[in-house]
Image (cartoon, rainbow, N blue to C red; front, side, top):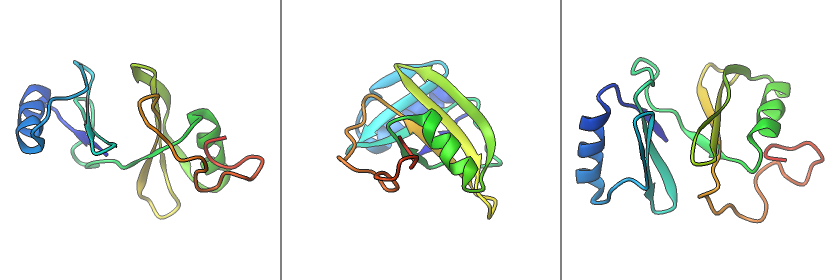
Amino acid sequence: MIYPAPDLAAAKTWWSSVLGIEPYFDEPFYVGFNVGGYELALDPNGDPAVGPVTYWGVRDVDAALKWVVAAGATVRAEVQEVGGGIRVATVVEPSGAVVGLIENPQFVLPDTLPGEGRAEGPGR
């Protein structure tokens, strides 16, 4: 989950206090917390009008983006490196919700993700 954080310093202080942990990734463009194996991040460039965006962990964000677009989503933000080998993209699914895709070397993914096992499934 990535939250918009126009005042990144204040948001980082607040979330650190609430979570009781410091971020594992702390840069002026992205702050990431590992909360029980889940990513809670702060984006100073995020749009508060959109609100937080939930990200699906995938092995290959480029392949996953192609897969969800072929399934009817539209690209909101192309794949971009956000630091530390973390790559993200966002789409708008057919009902209008924003969905994120994240390839993060910090994540420990299960042996099989939903949609895998098909030649061109998400995350392949």
